[in-house]
Image (cartoon, rainbow, N blue to C red):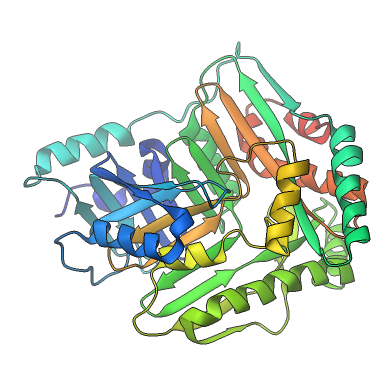
Length: 419
């Protein structure tokens, strides 16, 4: 179906307004309405993924182009024991990296072009307004910074040193934001989109993010992952910023932490692949607020190729958001973190009826309800971690989502630095 005016529409802004959005790997998908939902029973792994995909396919022919036809959006919890929900929109607008666009409709009856156009135009006109001059706000750390540093990070670091087999535990802390008027979620997300043009951008209802980290994608028989582990701060002075990136590139601590994650991906993806490999050396991935170490992992799937949902089940949670060894690290998180992550650091993305799709690790994200937002930042704690440096790293990472949330106010930067 073709619609007049569709070619000039900003799909990122549309998806930010409509409630279902993915931007990443050269593709933008924006959904409107809910045709149906499918529960993903994640604890059952590959069997659950296969059942979910079969339900998504239904009686329809498989799509010839990835991201067309019925497409499901999902933002799943960090805890893999928690079931997820796949949302299939009634209206899907898509664009690929060549600028080709499409519209897919999932409905019980024949589509009504006039009604579809009216719905799209109504959503596209929703304002992206900032809070008015009389609005107020507050920002706080759910757990006091020094308490998190001294009682949680230092304790876990000492446990790693004493254990001898535990390599890494990822610990997160939570910031709570509240303003006197409802948060315009679309405004926050489009601000993040402008600040982080290369990020995997998403909105699944009230959960939004601009994640630099691709968990896993599948396009026909090609599987990719781009894990990030190891972080250094950005600086406004170019020489200081370049020195920070160089220190990260040569840091034994950060490179060791990064290699744990690369080895994990190669091990977990190998059973699905006829070939899989990683770039020989990590590179520095620079985004607006921090530098990261990143390595592209790519493989060719065996026949029949696993769906992206199977690959998500196999690779999440990664050492970059959980730790290593995984079972011990997750138990340490449950015991010491004192926070409920919810969808933070879980998998968020999309899947089509052929099993193609892409999922990001949901870092640099925010859970928004009415006038409140919950934002997390995490760090990888290892034997030689400095608790104060880990605290400082969370402040750098908080900037990604708290910056757009607080952008209308002039004293926002200092508030984030004080968290």
